[in-house]
Length: 112
Length: 114
Image (cartoon, rainbow over all chains, first blue to last red; front, side, top):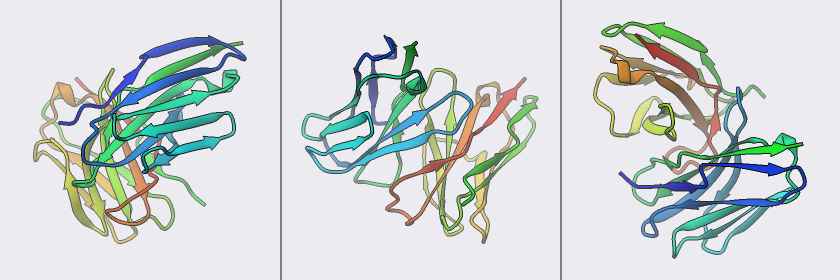
């Protein structure tokens, strides 16, 4: 069983603050790293699919970076808004098989 | 475009019973994956179906089984339910077969086993 870890487990920030969280995964046999946003009572929503070392992806105020050699990805949110409150999940896919391994998520609460 | 739907939304069963959960994939998607999310855990991969065939399985016992239909909708069946089967069950559809990229998730079915 592969170990994917996310930190911190939860985070409370003030509206307007910028924040970031980490996803750690095995540095060998890398194929892809996915980020999802999961709002309460909704379906997980795909944010980014990252496949290349050094990848940087951006969607509005949210961006992500990838370091496959050291086995981590950062998710950044600039100028957090209350609507950013959600659980952010990362999922690692190795280059063997087609299984995704999820972290336990970072729960973000943005206080107005 | 219709998103991924799951039914039922909630379900209560007793130990030893059997349950069937259903998933309708996003239009045009030929791959469905099922996940179990227990309290405090991340989603755990159960299995994947591609064009009606099982295409990968996680560390779940045989009493977890599935089907995919010609319209690519899918069922997850769990026999001989145990208390630890209480969890949120998610399905996700994708396009492109085994080398799937973005997965599109349904809202989940919450199962409680008493």
